Image 1 (cartoon, rainbow, N blue to C red):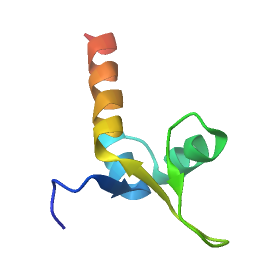
Image 2: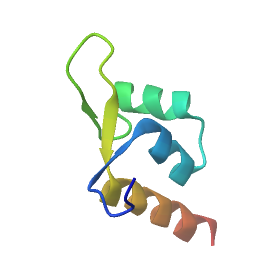
Image 3: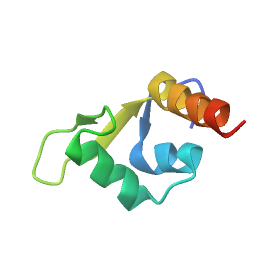
Length: 64
């Protein structure tokens, strides 16, 4: 997998956010995290890499 892809999976977002993948999925489902749901009953959530990176940066600023 290339690191410069625009969209990332729930598992990749969870790793960057240092959260459990299920937590990230619930937050996407509730609307707390901006995500796109793929088609189908079990459609996965995908996230824009830049959006997740902004969340990480915001957390780092708050923690500093």
